[in-house]
Image 1: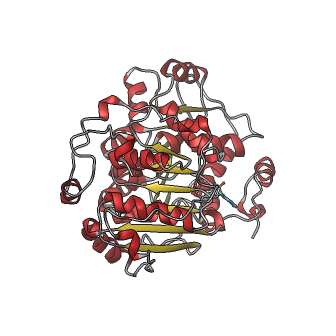
Image 2: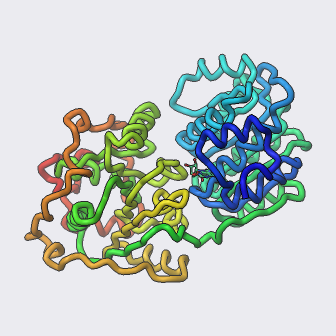
Image 3: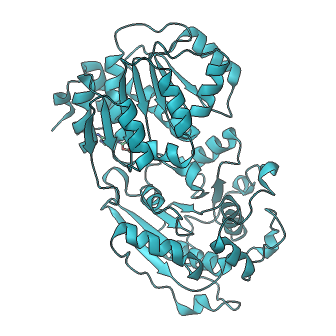
Amino acid sequence: MSFDYLGLSDELLSAIKDAGYTEPTPIQKKTIPSTLQGRDILGIAQTGTGKTASFTLPLIDILSQGRARARMPRSLILEPTRELAAQVAESFDKYGKNSKLTCALLIGGTDFAGQVKKLDKGVDVLIATPGRLLDHMERGNVMLNGVEILVVDEADRMLDMGFIPDIEKICKMLSKKIQSLFFSATMPPEVKRLTDTFLKDPKEFEVSAPTATATTIKQHLVKFKGNDSVKRQVLRHILDGDDVKNAIIFCNRKKEVKIVNKSLKVHKYSAAELHGDLHQSTRMEVLNDFKTGKIKILVASDVAARGLDIPDVSHVFNFDVPSNPEDYIHRIGRTGRAGKTGTSFTLSTQFDKKYLDGLLKFLEKDIPIYKVPDSLLEDGKQKRPSRPKEDVKSAPKSEKKQPSRDTKAQNTNKPKNMNDENRHKSKEPVIGLGDHVPDFLIR
Ligand code: AMP
């Protein structure tokens, strides 16, 4: 089935063709016609399924008639993170290039006054994170009574990040007559309550079960005993041995993100870190460097990386088993996107046992075991891994600079659970050093 039968305008079809899409994805096929008919939508879909286009495309056609007034946006898209919001804005630029619609991005960490200026001119599509939007609302910079369409994206992530009260507050400011589209990868009870309250007789679509992972991803579980130093050794072994073109490495805590990144750099890998403590401009810069291939390895926290559309990631590593099993789906969903193939490795030691048990129960199936040589696991006298391949190593000199570190976070990363406590009781060389870990200690 081609895009021609979904009811979209010729201008939009031309932009879709220019984007290189030939067929709508299942979520697009299901939601676009109903959205164009004015129905409320509840879409259960994970990232990587083409869900951004499933709401941006019809939105562009629906808003094509009419004009925006100062400070009164005609549509509102709420995203949990700045990166996701910026990504949706990029989609609008791509798909809306033949329309005259104006778009504004209200996210933290960027120019507040510039955002006010844009709002003053009038915007058709307002893309925002809840906190920044409420900030502008409280100062009278934006009024929501002109909103005709609301999109709440990644509703379950909004819940994880504590944004549900903000979403409720925002929804209550909107007219009762608006069209609402909610998207979520999973449906926890709090999200269900939200959709029951704010959606009117919604058309529900589910493109994959909440526990489903893309079939294009080859998953591996690497189980072994050892501390984080051994884990890093195992990580390097796989980075060197598998055909890794580029990779995202997820850690459960920001502190771990920093340590793993630093360690990889010490070992001359082309790596950078991405987490919520970094300045917005640094986050964007790092992301861009990774997208363009300047950096080959991105070490990231869940919050910073959720939903990011980074095409062509060959590998995803879970340095830790995620504490929330659903994060596993999101993490490994960074690879094997839009029909491409990908590989994931999940490292699990005795300290991850609780989370691994929870994950396997959630997945209702085993993850195939990947064995690493025993010689690697002999703590203390570990052998050096085989000579690394050039593609993920040899960072150009300019990449060696560490992204800026937010000093505020340095002393606040206290271990949160037994897992973390144990790790620090182990032979890790980071005790008492806060986030500053000298290079010579990281191996
Ligand atoms: P999303 O789930 O919205 O993050 O989209 C995942 C990726 O799929 C993005 O890189 C989109 O550009 C791409 N994409 C979206 N729709 C299509 C389509 N119909 N055909 C091919 N790629 C698509």
